[in-house]
Image (cartoon, rainbow, N blue to C red; front, side, top):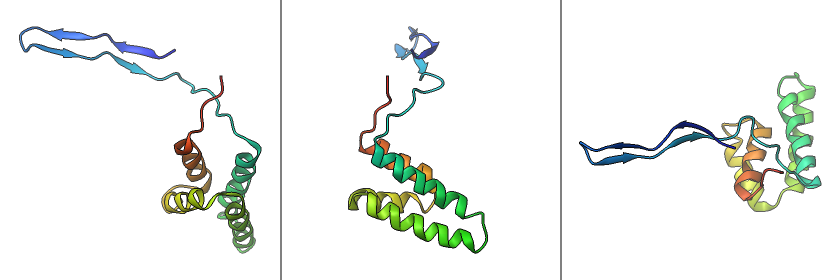
Length: 106
């Protein structure tokens, strides 16, 4: 249930009506991921952690990217690479899944 901050406000002098302001549920409901998406997130996490380990992290990241590419569709992978330029791998993958139509579980 959204949290209502401000009810609809009418300003008669200006003949303006402001809409009500609401915040989404906090915390948001958990996302429902299928097995393929969970596997992809495991490899994106491996890539994110690998970035902080010298030398061995490069090998882990290479393995992770190969598995991510194998498991994602070409369209998903293209979007992932675009978002991964400025977002960590895990968040970039979640963004791709959400844009594709991932719904919260209820």
